[in-house]
Image (cartoon, rainbow, N blue to C red; front, side, top):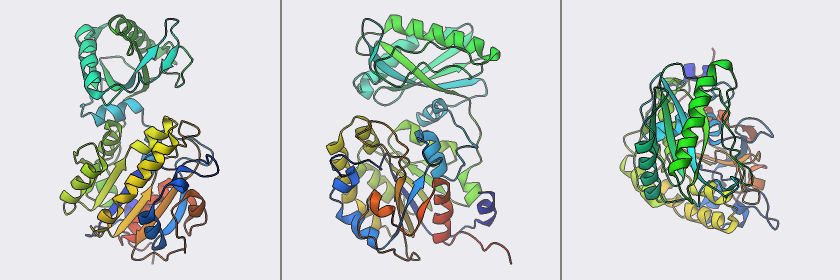
Length: 396
């Protein structure tokens, strides 16, 4: 990627990275969600494109959304390890200082034995989330001289900043990431993190005292400080914009220097924002979240319907005449597994300079036969820059 940084040049060509979160699937009754979906527009686009599969981190590794997106943005996820808390905090617009430890929280439901029965508390509304966060903030403002800053997110998610001296993030997460288990007690992994672990335990204790079902527990993960990444616009000579509805993805975009374009909650709201701002930027990250959520819920048919809805907006996206369009996922979320998985991501790349590979349907199995083969997600940005004529020749 250092070489790509040196070769990047500025021009007016438009690049669009269309990320359908959790796009890839696994067979249920013989077909994946993408194979079951009726996607005539994506299929027609596939005929004019070159296809392939990508691995976000490495073969067989199941990625989180953070490293998966960083790879798509051109940042080696093994070099830049970003805590989820930082992404959530930036995503909701919080300003981080060098004294901050940011943490991503879930409101959850536990039974009378303290066993987690729902890690997402029934995906409560964002309005209810905001109400509960205000209660937490009113009751817990400071622990051992450390400021506690609580900020609501979407549905069951929220963010906590622990702001003070002598704080280190190397502590155990309290979220076991699976129902049927009790929350994990926060413990320090290193001697210098003892203070942080102690404050977290006290925060969880006080939160339990003021919470009630179905949001009668908090689960915390992604303890992290701001890493300070080099910006995409400087690295790749791009003016970059993000269109996303969930805070974490806005946080990822902010982390790499993108401008955030606010939109409504639906695909059509996001599309309107894209059209309105099309002439102001030359790189767009356009994110669709719900495929991932439906996959995690095990809702195979719901994910199929969502992919069909996504397919319906492809003609309007093409009407903007992007010079390079990539359609892919950050990671796979098969409904049959109800979680992220190690399966590679289907990818389609459209440009006037591609040599189509003869594939006529956009599915995982067809992408496996595509002309791009199977390659790291880290190579997506270099390919987009190349097909956008934004890379100089290397060497004499």
